[in-house]
Length: 494
Ligand SMILES: CC(C)(CO)[C@@H](O)C(=O)[O-]
Image (cartoon, rainbow, N blue to C red; front, side, top):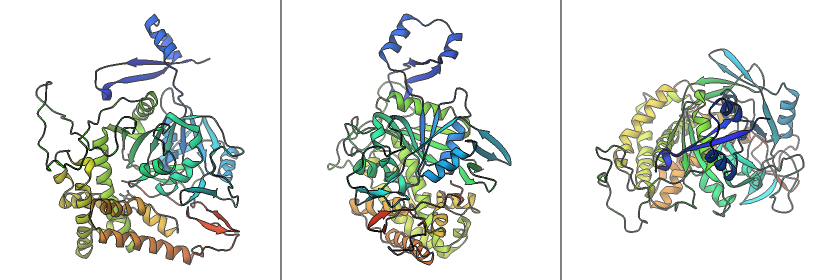
C-alpha cells in the first residue's frame, strides 16, 4: 500500500517562505531513515488528502485536470459533472481527457467522476435543480441521490462567474473549514457573493485561493473531452486571507520588497493622505493552512499551467488590470459583434474607451484596499490602462471575446462581474459610473434580444426546448434552468 508522508520545512519566520511537501512513501523510502522527530511529526499532523476536485468540466477545467495528471506523482483528480447526461457520456467514453497542442494530442486518464447537480438559486434561496423540473420544498443542504457525501479538501471552481453559486450549493456540505477552494473566474465579486450566500459564517467558511487565467482554450471538433490549447498564457495564483485571520475591510499595508538593510526598511510615502474613516492598514502576511500550501505547490509544480504565486495585494492589482481590459474589450466586441481587433485604429471607439476608462480608473484608485499601496495612482492611471487594453486587443485581435461568444449563443454573460462590479463599487465609493452602467445594460439588452430571437426570452416557453442560460425559467410553477451549449467553443483568453 502506498503510504503518504508530509515533510514540513520551516525556512523563515515569514509565512510566504514556509513550506510543506507532500511526497509518496515510495520516494521517501529511497532517502535516509526517518528520524524519531519526523515520525512524531507525522503522528501529530494528519496526512493531507491529496485529492483535487474540479468543478466545471469545460475547457478550463479539462485543461487543468489534464495538466495535473501529467506531473510526477500526480494527485488523484475527481471531475464534478453538473448533469447526468454529461456524466453518462463520460462513463460510456474511455474516461480520458485529451489536450491538443500545436496539432499534437496528449491523452491522459486515471480520473474519477462524480455528479454534483447545481441548485438553482433565486433571491438567495435554492428553488430547484438545474436541467430538471424537480422543485426543492426545503432549503437544500444535503446530497441528492447519486451524489457523493465525502468531504472535499481541495476544490478548483472553473465554472463561469454566474454559475458559481449554483455549483457550490451542490457541494457546500462537503466543504469544511479546512478545505481550500480556488476560484478561476473572470471579473470580480464572486468571493463576496459566495461568502454572503453560501458560507455566511466565517467560523465554518473554507479557505480561498484566487487565480487569473490567461491561457486560451477551445473545444476540439474531433470529439468530446478534447480541448485545444490555442494560446499559451499563465495562471497567477494567490491565497486570500481568511476573515478569521484578517478583517476584509482593512487596507493592505505596503510590503517593502527591496531594501538595502534587513532591519527596519523605510516605509514608502503613501500616495494618498491617510483616511481617518478607514481602519488602520494590515500587513498582507498570514499563516497558510496545509491544504492551501498543498494546492498551491501542486499547481506551481505543473509546468503546462505556467503558474506563479503572488501576495494578496499584488494579485488584487493584477485582477484589477485584467478587469479594466475585460471592461472594454468584452462589451465593445459584443456591441460591435466583432473580434477583439475591431476596437483598434478607430478613433470613435477610442473616445468611448477613454470615457469608460476614466470611470474605471477612478473607481480602482478609490478602493480602500489599495489606499496605502505605493504607485497605485500611476499603475491605474487611465492612460496606462488604455495602453494595456490596446496591447491585449492587439495580441488577441483574431479572438472572439468570451462575452461575445456567450451573447451569440444567448447565454448569460459575466458582465455583472465586470462592468457591473465597477458600477456597484462606484456606488459604494460615491463615483457615478454612467458609461459603464449604460454598457452593462446594452450587453444585457443584446443578450435578451438574441434569447428572444431564439424563442427563449419569455418566461413560459415550449417545454420541449432547453434554455441555454443559467437564469430562471418558470416551468410548471417551478424555477428551472438549462445549461450552456457545451459544444460551443470557448474563446481564447488573455
Ligand atoms: C482579454 C479577452 C477579452 C481576450 O479575448 C479575454 O479575457 C476574454 O475573452 O474574456
